[in-house]
Image (cartoon, rainbow, N blue to C red):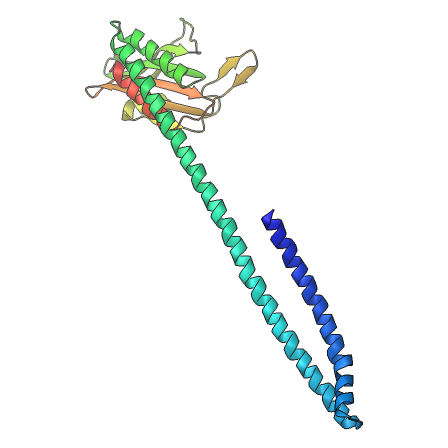
Length: 261
């Protein structure tokens, strides 16, 4: 409301200034010369012309001073308004950043609590590695709200090492089929070879597909992480989601995966 009042007042002052200029022009050109002639008793045309010239000069000087005054007024008013608006904008931006930071901290703390619970559960399982990997994959996909996941275990055939599909989340491989990658083959094979987790924000088309009653779709986000124990690769976990999988989610998955190793 104060902003609208200031704007209305500024418009009113400008209108009054323009009206005042017109009255000033009328007075200097018509009323003032006549008053000077009558008061000074001038009847000579040459003297009357000198008076008119003087009044014109006076008009120019008055208009110039008024124009400078108006320019200074506008110059001093506008920056103050802009500065005030900028301060409000910066305050709102800072408040938003602080709010986002608080949300991120709370989300990270929440994931840490979930990770501790899931780690404890997996570490207490007295079962073969294959079953532990299934519990790990199911737990990660549920907590991350992932759409599909796959777990691979390392196998060695002769001198060649592979990772072989052992279980999936919302992903089924018929018993008659086998999914196996050499170290360095495909995304999962690259993670197996390097031993470093990767996060992908644009999953290659048809790399992995989610099938439902509504049709087929490719998740946009994916994380692939190795499971390593004493410098030996035990397996690889793939998780794909339609929701972003950022640094917080990656840290959570890595923390839980270490429980299997």
